[in-house]
Amino acid sequence: MEPDTADTRAAYDTVAEDYLDIVRDAFGDDLHERAALAGFAARLGDGVVADIGCGAGRLTGPLRHLGLDVVSLDLSPGMVGVARREHPDVPAAVGALDALPLAGGVVAAALAWYSLINTPTDRLTAVFAELRRVLADGGLLLVGFQVGDEVRHHRHLYGHDLVLDSYRRPPDVVAAAAVDAGFVEVERTVRPPVPPEDGDQAYLLLRR
Image 1: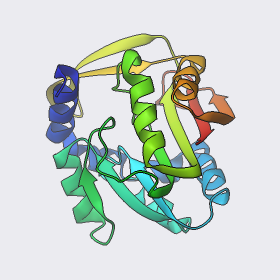
Image 2 (image 1 turned 120 degrees about the vertical axis):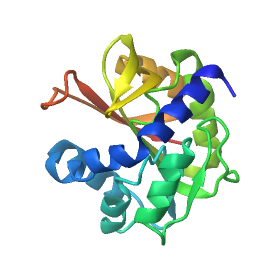
Image 3 (image 1 turned 30 degrees about the vertical axis):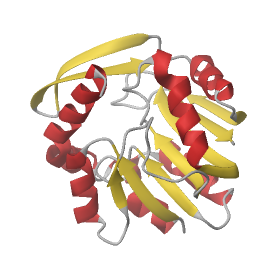
Image 4 (image 1 turned 90 degrees about the vertical axis):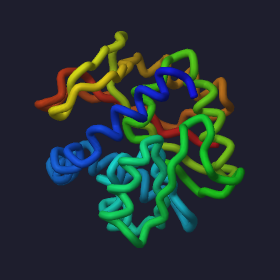
């Protein structure tokens, strides 16, 4: 395991319980997020949707409310444990973004909602290639991320000491990595921040 991946796993294991309490009701307050996910769901037919980097399962309920059949995956065993507890009827598994525990072409669509923000830019294309591998032909991937051009080195989050780097990137950089992995960009949204956000947010819809 790469050192930064180990740090990321350890950090999210550390904050798993507190993280859920902090973000549990965030979906209801974020109209942009609700609109993006509803638009994503409206484009889908039948089949399983993989919530890649599901965290504590914050979006599992909203995704199922939109009529989607969800499977959850996350790097952090701590987060997966919370997700299983909160949604015991939804399959959830531990898996790294570049080594997902899924066979090729088994999911109809995937969501990577702020799941790539801890991945170094030089590994983005490999991660997108893995996401593309598990998608069926023509499958859609929706990616959410913070816009910028910097690395933030976190040493304290959610009330805990930890080591975690997060990357803010221009949409063109993220889109180029996805295209290099074989995706086609379908739609792009960039919006201004809404407090407590401190920077623009971007959503990319990609097709395998």
